Image 1 (cartoon, helix red, strand yellow):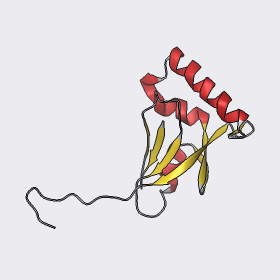
Image 2 (tube, one colour):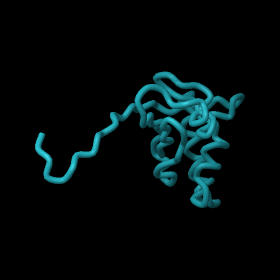
Image 3 (cartoon, helix red, strand yellow):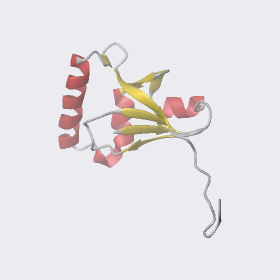
Image 4 (cartoon, rainbow, N blue to C red):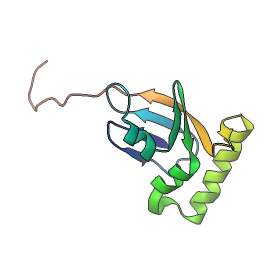
Length: 110
């Protein structure tokens, strides 16, 4: 599961993959406050703390009862490793910064 943040928004990618959790910064610099808020990010550095209620909201229609059971199991594993802050209601994810790519016109030479 990836929480992708850009300059203005947040979206959940692969919400059914509960084997890993990453926060992807898909913009130059830092995401705007609106994107952080939409993604439920309460701390951002080398790792990010993300509110679990925001992940549930962003999962949308994928958040079935089976999804919830799997999500809770993921949180249990993360909790055992110290990656859940129950006071904040947040889970820790590693941060990946992905370089933006400029599209190249078809047939263009580099």
